[in-house]
Each structure stands twice: as C-alpha cells, then as structure tokens.
Amino acid sequence: MPSEPAASRGAARRTSRGPARGDPAWAAGAVVLVAAAVIVPHLFDVGFRMRLVAESAPLFGRFRLHAGPGTVPAVVIALVVVLWGAPLARRLSFGRLVALTSAVLFVWALSLGTVAGWQRFATKLTGYDQYLHEVPGARADVGAAVGEFARRIPDHQPDSWTVHVSGHPPGALLTFVGLDRIGLGGGTWAALFCTAAGASAAAAVLLTIRTLGTEEIARCSAPFLALFPGALWLAPSGDAYFAGTAAWGIAALAAAAVSHGRRAVAFGVLAGLVLGWAVFLNYGLILLGVMAVTVLVIARNPRPLLTAVPAALAVVGLFALAGFWWLDGYHGVVLRYYQGIASFRPFAYWGWANLAAAACAFGVAGAAGLGRVPGALGALRRPLRGTPGALLALAAGAAVMVLAADLSALSKAEVERIWLPFTVWIAAGAGMLWYGRSDAIASAWLAAQAAGALLVAHTVLIYQ
Image (cartoon, rainbow, N blue to C red; front, side, top):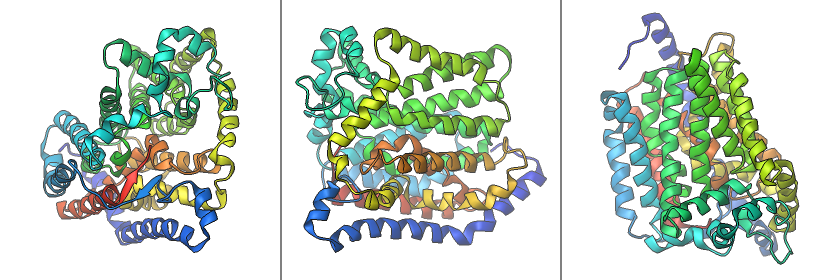
C-alpha cells in the first residue's frame, strides 16, 4: 500500500481509533430504528397498516420466509468476502481491486436478486407499471414520446404513462428504448443492464475516494462496497442504473477538480454531461448538487464549474429542444404523486421510517461510519484532500442528500431503492472502521453487513 507521511498517518490513525467505542452504539441505533419501524405499525389498527401500502414496512415488500437459486451463491460470496476481503484489498493492485469490487458486487446483487427465483428477477422490469411496458409505444415515435412526455405524466388520462415512467424524466424510458433498438430488449437484458450499471458504482466510488482522499482509505472501503447491502435493490431496478450513472458523474467531477489544463476541461465537460443526464433519469438526483459541492470543497477548487455547468445545461437544452422542459415534468410528477398512494401514506410514520429503510441499504457498518462524521467536524478547517477525512466528507454529503430527500415528503416508502445513489456513498464510509486497524475488525463488520442483507433477502419478498 502507498505510504503517507509518518506524522499525518499517525495522526489519522489516532483519529480513527478515537471514536471506536462509539461505533457499536451507532450500529445498534440503526438496528433499533429498523426494529421500531417494523414494530410500530403493528401497534395500530389494520386501517393504519393498510395506509402504509407496505406489508413489510419500512421495506416495500411482503414478509415471507423463502429461499431460492440465489441463496447458496449469496452465502458463499458473503463468506469469501468476510474471510478474505480485507487481505485481498491490501494486496491487490488498485486497478484489479477496483475491477474485482464491482464484479463481486454484481454477482452478490445477482445472487440476492434471484433468492426469490430467476424468473422473478427476469420479469421485474416488465410489469404493467414498469418501464418496459411503455417501450413499444415510445420506440415507434421517440420524438413524439419526448415532446408529449410532460403532458402524459398526470394520472386519469387515456394515455397516462405507467407508474415508473411517469415518476421519472424521459431519460430512463429512452435508455430502455435504446437497449431495445440495439437488440437487447426484454426483461432479462434490462435486468442485467441495470444490475451491471449499479455494480459499476462501486468502481466509481473507489476512484473518487482515491482521487480526493488516499489509496489506503479507498482500499479500506472496497470490501464494504463489494458487500453493499443495497445490492438487494440493485437486481434489478432502474434505480441501480441511476446510482451507477450518478457515481460516475461524481467521479469525473473529482478528477476534474484535481487535474489541470486540457485534462481538467475534458473531465469537467464529461462530469457535466453525465450529471446532466442523471438529472433526466431521476428528478431526485438534482440533489447531486450537494455531492458536487462536497467534492469541490474537498478539492478546494471551484474551477470545474466553468466547464461542468455549461455541459449540464447543454443536456437541459437538448431535451428542451425535443419538447421536454424539466420543471414541467417535475410539477407533473408532484401532481401524479399525490394522485396516488402518497396522498394517504402518513408522513408521521414515513418521515422517520424512511431513514430505517435507508439503513437497511447502507447497513450497520455504514451507520457506524456515519458516527465518525461528528467527531471529524473539528477538522474542517484543515485541508481534507489527501486525507481519510475526504471519505467522511463524502459520506456526510450523502447523508445530507438523504435528509433533504426525506424532508421533501416526496419519498414516502420505497426509499431503500430510490436512494441507492446516496446510500452507496454511506456504505463506503464504513471503510473508516477498518482504517488503521486489524483485518479481524474488517471481517467482523463485513459479517454484520452480510448478515443483515441475507436476513432481509430471505424474509422479505421484495417488490419494485
């Protein structure tokens, strides 16, 4: 592993050791929060539980003990990463580690996604409320589909979009139309595409951490990203694709912030294009502005805005020329949202139960990693770039995005899936728990992460 100056390394590791006693408390707090979110609905009458529209609240699914073809591979992958993930993260070349982390996350997600059966995995995106349901009509006239997209968002019209299409800008639908046109149509290809895109987020996050922090702290995050509990919702969901896209946009912005000359310009333009496209995949990804600011603060370099912002605006302009204005779509989505189940899902419950659902995605180790953030606030006056503190700052930025999304009241339930672009960064923050410590510490936290994901996978029949 690359060496750091002895003084800074020693100080960083002393800081890492300092909050260790509080780590279990933060992890226990996450467990208590999830348990409360599960128990509280059963303290009320059936009418209240029906208004939650989530039989396994706080997760969107149904309680049912089950196993399937993905069970054995999932358990084996978990054991391998728990036992050998830390040593491999220390010894592999960084390039191989990045590739392996995303590959393991892909197989881990695929295994968890097929615990309920391969057929269920292959058909999740083909339902009447899903993206692929609208592909034939949009494929026939893409220009018309984009031009009239905003008009068709509200419900109770003869040609209203299905639930998932109406809830997102046209970029999501256009992606699946594009897959269909190149011969990758159908539920299986769409599921594999989304899962692979989501798994690639691990590589983007690791590269971002190394770019802004250190290679050592990035290595510490790798096993935790490989066993990201949110993999339960990567396979498959459109949000997995959104998470991958968002992560690569942030990685490009980080590269722009530490580069110079033409390289900085190229990465800045790329970041703007990718993040601009991300905003046309999911309205909620406008919150990526928080992470973008976090990246620039860590790097102490606002110059990438000079190239990234015009590139992002170019994406906005192209959609406007095609007939879709983002704000029109957003207002239509708010209307559609309250035409449906959101009108009676109680925020008094979901306002805090959403956080429990998110905790299921970033896991107890991610929660413990967040516990390191308050103790690091005193270091904000010192440069974060090139230190482990960069990882904490990224996790903190993700936590702010989660809180902002929650307080918007436009996400009541299903956030374990919807917030994947945010929770993957929080899960990466668990690397702080291993930094400067023994491999046994990493294995213990990885075992806790895997146990939580396996428990949910085999007790909740996950809906999408």
